[in-house]
Length: 322
Image (tube, rainbow, N blue to C red; front, side, top):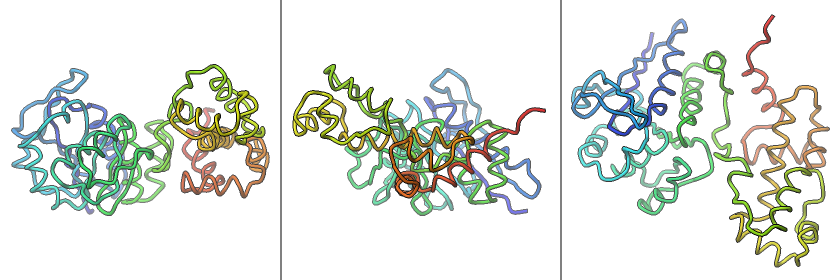
């Protein structure tokens, strides 16, 4: 049996779920026949660390004594703020020797400090994307996806996205069925596509300050199948199309077209999760008009077709009780 070792780095101020979420996934996989992940945690000096929630985690040992792992996992948390000369020096020297380098949430900041993200496409918690891009201009930061794979490097967005990434790694190592079994046990969806947005349209966009624009946002949310072109929306807000488009972007942080795209995609996803609604009906109700137009939108944004999205959602759902 080939064992893939997973070493998780611990430090004061680590986010506990960044550690335990992926570890539960790998531990769950190890309960399957013929699968083994050797799980190990280590801090710089081998001493206990205190998490952001106040929990104390006791590592298996020190980083200095840790063998080279197959997968090196660096979690995030408030402890990633500021300078970390000893930890980044260790990462700079030892991380390149691991077969797979993984960060969860703001763990990407530690990898960036160590110079390990230069030239790579990465993501992190939405609240730290701007900082990561500003402080490390050689890093290509994508603020939207929940996780990103770039060669041997894998980075995820905030907290629970680490579970999605760990499931993706188990699927890569041992196949979809095992990852599906773990997802069912953890009662999570297998698996949110890596390039699924960190936020819904309503959360990723700001709420407009002016009442007419807020009303337009609400209208879009409630009527995805309506005519949502700029001219129609501008007329609803009683503004010229040019003024409307400029004001909408200034107050929400996104264009009207991009906002409509996100709302329609989310509406279609919710309908697809209802097995009683046909694909053609979903496309019409979500404003796409045709199944082909909806398919193009799904592939572009989620890298999966609507039928595959529905299949994965159904497969991940727990079996009904009898």
